[in-house]
Image 1: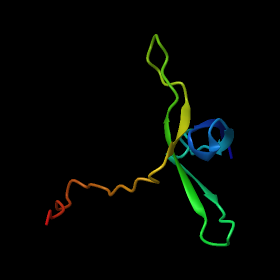
Image 2 (image 1 turned 90 degrees about the vertical axis):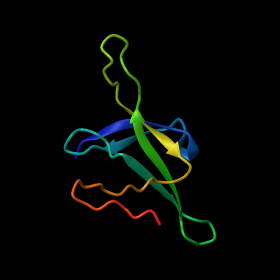
Image 3 (image 1 turned 180 degrees about the horizontal axis):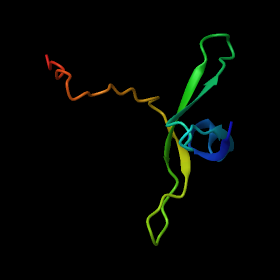
Image 4 (image 1 turned 180 degrees about the vertical axis):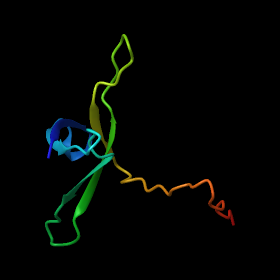
Length: 91
């Protein structure tokens, strides 16, 4: 498996660079979740990081890699929107 050193911004991993496995397209996953065990034996706390572009080149506007940014609200769950599906009823 191939990995890529990816920096983290914000949250408990701020400033760290960790190797993250990349997929078949060569990109790291869109979300990176870090479970931290609770000291009292309760359920672990999960910190979520979202993949965002690291920046762009000045001349051509090409992307310069990825950075994981801390998402304090947790992972955003999205539903698929198929063209043949009925719209959700707004009750």
